[in-house]
Amino acid sequence: MDNKIDISVITKPISIQFECPYCDSEVTIDYDDFESEVGECCDWPYSKIKCPECEKVLEIDNIDW
Image 1: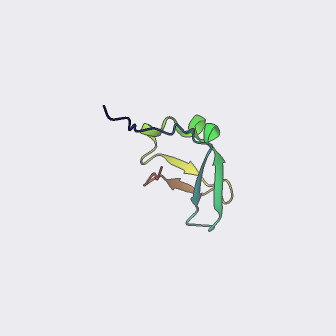
Image 2 (image 1 turned 90 degrees about the vertical axis):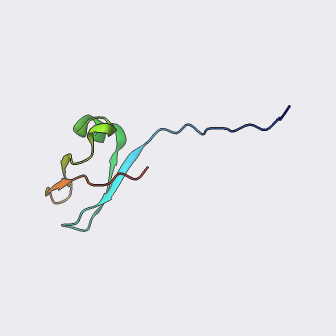
Image 3 (image 1 turned 90 degrees about the horizontal axis):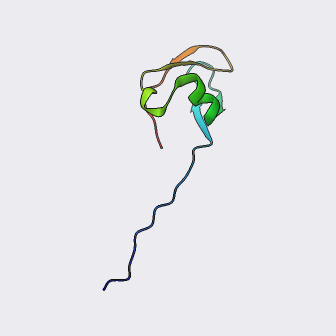
């Protein structure tokens, strides 16, 4: 019998972060607030959000977990 196991670390996202291409601000948004605005992660690609700093409309392209 082999006594080796694989484990999974379960994590909960706490925030999202991006750099605005218009104002160059490093933006961090609480995950729950972001999810309330944009929806569940399967809805994020190509969704639009406003930069909270300059209020320009941005389109989500890539998601890095």
